Amino acid sequence: MLERSSCPGPSRRLGNQGSLLPGSRTPCKERCLPPWLLGSSPSQDRLVWRGPVTLGFFPLVSWTGQFRVIGPGHPIRALVGDEAELPCRIYPGKNATGMEVGWYRPPFSRVVHLYRNGKDQDAEQAPEYRGRTELLRDTMGEGKVTLRIRNVRFSDEGGFTCFFRDHSYQEEAAMELRVEDPFYWINPSVLVLIAVLPVVLLQTAVGLLYLCLQHRLRGTGRRVGCRGPVPETRNTGPLGACWPDGQF
Image (cartoon, rainbow, N blue to C red):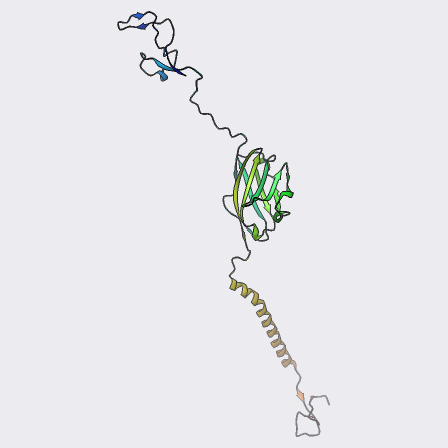
């Protein structure tokens, strides 16, 4: 409440000639309010706040029990069939073992992994993630956790949301997983060449082996001659048969 007030006391206000006027009261800037609130003119009445005095200090916001959730600042990449790790942490760091921590996927909030009451809630997982996830809790006392997904599939690609819940307070962070094929960098024509090349090499090897055997047979073969009662017909027997030299 604001009102005009003067300081009571035995002092008397000086008149024009410097005399004291009986019964008068003068504003007491020394005792009512400090000089920096009164100004420089001592002859005017001041507005004095009659009530609780509010000091000019702004209260600091208490962050007790509150935090922010921070995810990776870039997409996480993984190959089909490999493992993917999705890190998540709270800031400022604090012990999160007593919190509820989980990952879910939009748009229908499918539960990828859920940790509550100090243990994993496998029964609440989406069917496609049962048996494929693991919560790494080695640094959970510092507010840091990592979700490991095994046997990554193409269907795992997309957005994930990590959340921490402490009683009724919850914060979350979004992240992205990109799944790649191990041979994504190979041109389709190169794949065809890779498939055909072994067949060509096998045929070439078989042809070279055949030629090598023919060459060896020609180099080690015996000279063939013919003997019979008809000397004028060489290389033939009596009935036109031939025998190797030295057989008869």
